[in-house]
Image (tube, rainbow, N blue to C red; front, top):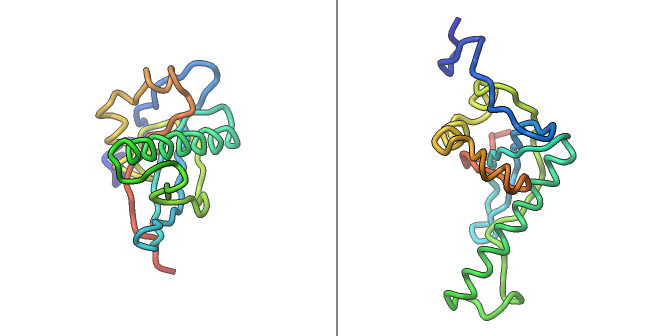
Length: 144
């Protein structure tokens, strides 16, 4: 039987990870400081537990923010770190899910699955730095 995402019930498993790591998909609400709007984003991380997954995403976001700040300083857009304002801030994690199949990733965000597949699941990158994340789609918040 094929589901709405084109996967059979025996969907391909996510690639195996070393060190008892598991795949996680985190859906977060973020606030864009320039446009003053909220949006949601899906990101893949690897970790042994839900708590570690959230921490790895936090560290990954911090590294990205530092990199963007350094680029802005180098480009002359800001003078130093005291002039820096991040692009967006975390509001909350809407869901944190351990996933074992590609279909489970697609159910949450097809764009994220495509990103992972297109880059061989970033296996070398995750092996070198498990405190990284891979971003998927960016979406408007659901209307309540």
